[in-house]
Image (cartoon, rainbow, N blue to C red; front, top):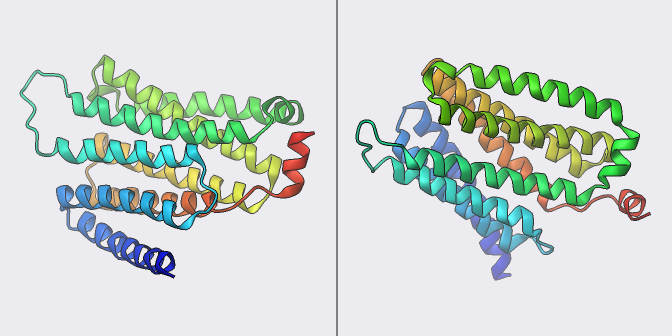
Length: 243
């Protein structure tokens, strides 16, 4: 009973914080919003530990890595960067985000028979690969004039990781066609849109509507990621993969 009460309290608190977070972004209280988002990710990790009976290590590591990235991002607001010095927080934060998304990629790869899927869907792999290369180049080049060489390649790799995650989510949904894979795909699509919105906000136009869309999509992405983490794969697919 106690665990159930804690679960309900955490859900209510997270919903409330999500609304407050969007309000803070709307009125451009960036530092407070960053701190609140960090707290929300930490609370989501607690909720995952409390609610989910069969926990997935890779998803938990995703939450931990993402929380570390959020802490780094929040702390960076309070550390002045002398002109001409390398922004270590920028690199550490983005690398932590990439690591967190890679845990999701590993989770997908672990759950699928890659060879079997590739043999059944070779055309899909080819089309997605071409689209990935095109999107990564186009999206990264949007910020080319604002970045130095090291920052550019970091953003390039970062965007590549996002596109790999999205492409694998598409393949996973086509192959499985179940509720869990659908939710993972919706989460990946929301994450992709949030990253595009953030890139546009930082390097194209500091329009508050764009910032609000980024915030909205990242919340939606985490909702879908969390819900799918509580579900199991369909039995018929599990048997097919084992065989």
